[in-house]
Amino acid sequence: MTTIRKREKENRRDRRQEKNLLLEYQKNEFDINDISLGGLSISAEAAAFSELQEIEATIKHRDNLIDMNKITLPMIVKRINSETNETAFQFQALNDEQFSILEAYLTGRAISKKSPII
Image (cartoon, helix red, strand yellow):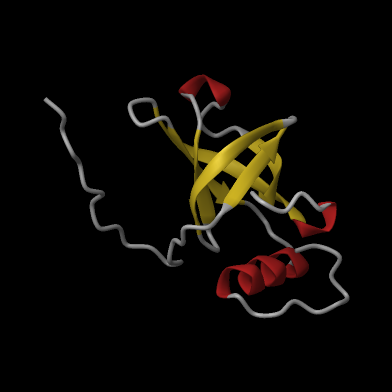
């Protein structure tokens, strides 16, 4: 018998969005399930990361392999669910430029030409 579980309503500061994105870490690519200004979740086997692990990883478009459409951000592993193969990350200490680029990217606003990424 298959059990279908709905996510419980979460109190979030930043709304999650589904995007056509990949997370690139140590030459591996992971599907991003959802992303917000606070963090993201990916599909990954539990053994790929450990809780509280601090990493720098790159977010990029799935169908656009041009390097200038990437952004590298510091993040920490907040949750690993081995049943669903989902790993959640929280962004860490984003500088003003990183935050502005991520915000503009998620809201669909244009990014100034001064920024070389996304």
